[in-house]
Length: 266
Image (cartoon, rainbow, N blue to C red; front, side, top):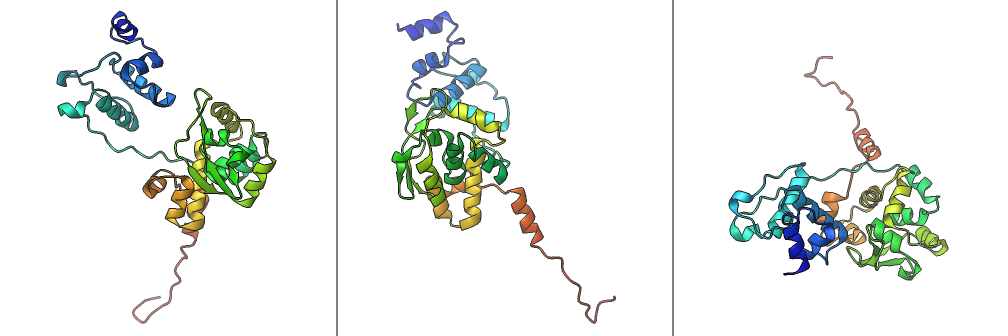
C-alpha cells in the first residue's frame, strides 16, 4: 500500500490532507495550483477527501452561493464520475460577475508608478496579470506582441499562458515597452501594489475589452485581441457597460418637441 493510501487510513480517509496530498491521490498534480486548491476545497467542504466513489445515498447537498454550487457540482461530477452512474449533479450556468470599470485617471496614475508597464499591458493590451508580469522585449516584433508565457500567481514560476497568441499594440505602448525595465514581479505582489492605486488586474482586462468594443464594434477583431477561442466568451464575460457610456447613450435620446395638430387640444 502506498504512502498516500496509508495516510488516508490514518487520517479518516484524508480529511486532513493538504492540497498536494490530495493532488497526488486524485491525479491533479498536472493542474494549475489554483485549480488544485479549488478541487481540494470543494471535497474538504463536503467531507469527501480520500473518497474515490460515491453512492446515491451519499451525495451531499450543495451549499454556498449560486456560482460556488455550480463549481462544486462540476468538481464532484468529475471526481466521482457521477454521470457514469446517472447520479450527476445538475450544473447551473454561472452567473456573470459584473466589474466596475476603473476611471482612466486612476489607470494613468497607476501607469506612472514603478509597475506602470504592467498596468499598461493589462489596460491597453488586455493581458492577464501573470502574462503581463512575464512580458519582456523578446515578445515584441514591431507593433506585434506574442504572448509566450505567464507567471503563476501561487508559486511565482514561469509556465505556459492560459491562451497563447499574438496581438497588436498602439505605438505609444510599443515605445513604453522599449523604455521599460522588466523585473518579472509576482502577480500577487503586483495586485497588492495596484489595489493601493484603486485598480485591479481583472478590472483592467475588462476595461480593455469594453474600450475595444466601444471603439471598433468588430467582434472578430475583439476576439483576436482578447485571445479567446469564441467571441461569445468575450461578449458574455468581459464587455462591461461603464457609467459614462450609459450616460452618453441615454443623453442621446432627445426629448420630443410637441407640434400641435388639428385633432390636438393645446
